[in-house]
Image (cartoon, rainbow over all chains, first blue to last red; front, side, top):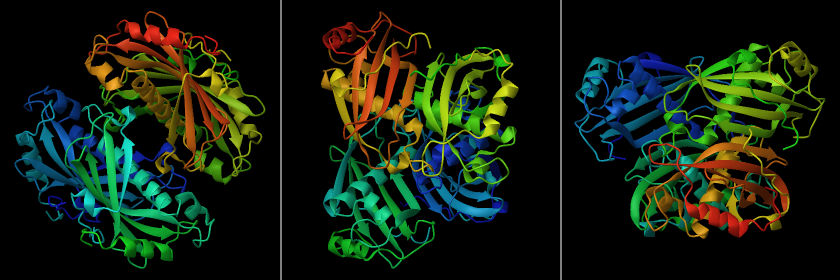
Amino acid sequence: MTRLSLQPSRHPADYAFTHRLRTRFAETDAMGIIHHAAYLPYLEEARVEYLRAIGYPYDAVRDGSGTQGDAVEFAVLEASVHYRRALRFDDEVQVHLVVGAVTRATFQIAYLLTVDGDVRATAVTVHGAVDRTGRPTRLPPWVRDVHAGASDTGVDS
Amino acid sequence: MTRLSLQPSRHPADYAFTHRLRTRFAETDAMGIIHHAAYLPYLEEARVEYLRAIGYPYDAVRDGSGTQGDAVEFAVLEASVHYRRALRFDDEVQVHLVVGAVTRATFQIAYLLTVDGDVRATAVTVHGAVDRTGRPTRLPPWVRDVHAGASDTGVDS
Amino acid sequence: MTRLSLQPSRHPADYAFTHRLRTRFAETDAMGIIHHAAYLPYLEEARVEYLRAIGYPYDAVRDGSGTQGDAVEFAVLEASVHYRRALRFDDEVQVHLVVGAVTRATFQIAYLLTVDGDVRATAVTVHGAVDRTGRPTRLPPWVRDVHAGASDTGVDS
Amino acid sequence: MTRLSLQPSRHPADYAFTHRLRTRFAETDAMGIIHHAAYLPYLEEARVEYLRAIGYPYDAVRDGSGTQGDAVEFAVLEASVHYRRALRFDDEVQVHLVVGAVTRATFQIAYLLTVDGDVRATAVTVHGAVDRTGRPTRLPPWVRDVHAGASDTGVDS
C-alpha cells in the first residue's frame, strides 16, 4: 500500500467539504450496525457531491462535456477505512473530505465521518485518471488546482 | 491506521487458504468493471469459508454453539484494499488469505485476489471480537492457535 | 402473488408523499444504467422518510419508544417493480408513494419513480408487522389511520 | 404489471435448472435475516449460470462472440418476488428457474428458492433484448428454442 500516504485528521475543521447523508436500512447487517462495505459508497457519494460543488460534475467529467478537458474517469486505486465507532440505521452522517498528495497521475482524498460531531470513521482513497477504454492517463490540470486551493488545511500529506 | 501492519504478499504460496468465487453482474459499474466496494464482501465470504474449513463455522461462533467458547462476532476495525488490475463480470476469482498479527484483542488477515494466476488486488482487514451487545471482548483462544499454525508462511507480520 | 393488488398510477398527483434521492455511481452496472436491484433500497428509503414525515420514525417504531405501541418491524412480504425507462448515474429521482389495501395483518404501498416528471418505474410492496423475534403480529392501529387519511387518492386498491 | 404472467410453482420438479449459492453476511440486515433487495442478485446469478449451462454464456451473448448472433443484453423489464420464509446468513439456497411466456420481444423466468427443500421465495422476472446502445431489439432465436425445450414443464404460462 505504498502510495497511501495521507493521515486523515479527526477534526472537521481540517477538511475542505462536508456532505450529509443518511444511512439506509438496506445497509445494516445482522450485527445491527451499518455493514463495513457500505462505507465505500458513502465516500464515493461525497466525492461526487464535492466535484459538483467545485464546478466539475462527475458526469460531465466522464463524458468530456464542458470545458474541463478530455473525458476521464477517476479509478479507485486504493481504499482504506478505519472504523472507529459503529454507524447505525437512520444515522445522519457528515462525510468531511479534503484532496491531498496530488501527483502527475494520482491524487488522494482523506475523509472523516461524524454523527453529531462524534467521530465514527476515517478513510483515505487513492485515485488515478483513466480514459474511456480504462487506460491510465494524466490527471486533468484542474485536479491540481483544486488541491492547491485546499492545501492550506491542517491535513498532513 | 496504526494497527494495519500486514504486508500482503503477491504469491499465492504465501497464503493458508483459497476460496473461489465468481463476480456477479450486479457488482459491475458503469466503467464496465467490478465496483471497488464489491471487494469487501468478497473478502468476507472468503473469511467465512476459511472459518468453516478450519472447524469454526461463523454462525456457530456467533451463537456460541459447539465447544469453542462464548458467542462472539468479529467486528471489522480496519479494511484496506489495493486495486491492482480490474476485475470484470464473470471472472472466476481466487481469494487467498492468511491470518497474521494476532494480539490479545485483534487479528489481521492478508488477502491476495487472482484470476488465472494474475494478480488483481491485495487487501488487509483488522478484526476485533465483540460480544452480542457490541462490546469489545477477548479473542477466543482458538484464533491464536489458528495463527500459530499458519505463522510459518512467508507473509510479514 | 395473490396479495399484491395495488395498481400504481403514473400520475404524481395520485400519491401522498414524495421523497427525492440521487442515484449513486455504486448503483450503476456495466450496461451504464442503474442496476435493477438498486431500486428496492430506493423504495425502502422513501418508506422510511414517509414514516418520519407522518410522525412515526421507523427506528422508534422498531424499538417501541414513543407512544405508538409495541415494537414492530415491517417485513417485506412481496415486492414488484416495473422498470419503464432506465435510471442513470446522478439522476435526481422523485419517489412518490401512497399506502393502500390495508388489512388486519398487511398493508401495501404503491410507488412511482420520476425524473424531471418523466416516468421511470412503478412498484408495489406488501408488508406485514413482525415482532422482534420475527413472528407475525397485528399491524399497529396507526397504520390503518394513515391509510384512511390517504385513501381519497386516485390509486385503485 | 401487465406482462408479468407466469405463476411460479412451489415444486422443484417443475423447473428446468437449479443453481446453488450461499447467502453472505453482507446481505443480512438488522432484522437478522437476508435483506429483501439481495434476492434480485441471487436470481441474476442463477440466470447467468443457466445461460452458461445451456451453452450461451452471458458475457459471450453481450459481446456477440461465438455463433449465437448479434451482441445483445437482457434488460430487466419487471421483477416480482414473493418472500415466503426468511433466508438467513450462511443458508445454502437452491435457486430453481424455468423460462416461459416467450414473445417476439420478451421472455419471462419463474424462480423457486428453497433451503433443504423448504420453500423460501418465489419470483418472476421479465426480460427484453437491447443492443449495446440500450435500444430494444428482437430476441435472439435461440431464446425461443430454449423455451420450446423447457415448455413441457408444469409451470403455467
